[in-house]
Length: 452
Image (cartoon, rainbow, N blue to C red):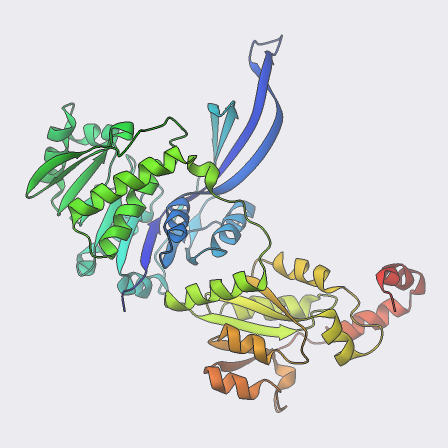
């Protein structure tokens, strides 16, 4: 079985502020931008990984992520579509904000100083299992980490998309710089000569210098040729076109293409990407349905990751719940909560439960950083969800020790390991309900939604 496409590099948070400008500020003459809408998305290596996943590839992203609001947002945006192996980051998440008027960028604001920490023990096996590797260098240190490991990864194709502030690419299958990056390394000369010089300088199998609307210049040990952009090239937002080129080249090599074939496929993919609207075509994240969560679990499993699941009512979320979910997430690469529906809770707990409706409980759980997805079930037990999800690990609280679990048979059927985690003393929904009952005015107000 071919391993996944592993993207390793620096992930940024891209933000577009789109508006209109019909006047200038009287005090400075600067354009006034009004009716502004904001859109955020992963950039850098995160964008490259999303583009590869959108093509249907099994993708694992190895990237530094900051322990700050933007870093946590990036993790949530990415984890909906692919497996993420986070690396430590020093500093704050880099955010690039484009101010756009009429579809054109008029200014960019950069913030954040994050740089890569060290490779973790979890990342090394992922790189070794890869079917192909794409290094998406954005000058923040992730490429330096993988450069040291590349001599041990010669059994798989490696595509390197370089950055002026990053290391020189070591010998690999294909390097994909743009023309400006190439000229900075080789000196001013025509693209054909620049590509030839770059390959002689770096070694490896091939280089493909991207030329924007003119296509690309390919060069290998067998010589070089120009790869024209296919069809009619339309103008558009070119942000992300280089990432699209590199991901398409890596995917083609993973599928068995030669370097020359990969360069042709990548040129076609990048041209279509710009013509179709570029990064604006990347859908905004929306709440997932059950089928989406199950598909994510399947992607993680096929990429060699570990799926963890737990189940319960999670009515009136408290510190005990949060502690269990945090520790459960540490056991694998994806945590899915199997949530009893309102009908299921009422049958199990009796009249007056749940206190919070299933939509509210789902929203609260999905808002937690450690929860990757929620699946709601109407049955008395999560057995059917477990059968569909096929987790590697099923987590319950230690208060279930010595008790027969109704889902035990299906856990055995799917080969899931049962792990009992310690509970937080004196933390339970029953205690919260009892405390609230002492304030009947608040209790009545909170329960006003329930109908018989």
